[in-house]
Image (cartoon, rainbow, N blue to C red; front, side, top):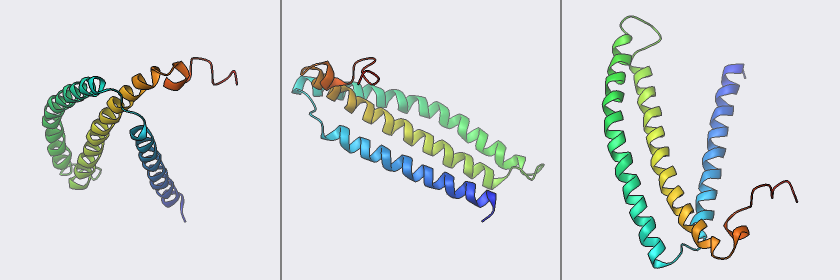
Length: 136
């Protein structure tokens, strides 16, 4: 196996491991107590607001992405480094980034309400206190 193939295999393996760990953490967070009905209503309102913000932001970014897609594709007329394949790769990356934004926002809101609920049981239940990881 040459170096380029090894790098690609490593990148794919690292991506799969990262996605797997993210799925594991998501299930771990979702299993925690979600708080009172009032806390859940507030979390739902926050989630709706965050989703509206991301939708608005991605609409604006989508216009820029469409222009960049066209420029990358057209640049293939003058350079072997650009073209349709590069443009499609750009769109795949942009789509993956947008998906990560939505998923991250969703799990962050879920984690926040669960942390607030856990704080009712004390600071240690809500998360480690500053410096606790090195004090044993």
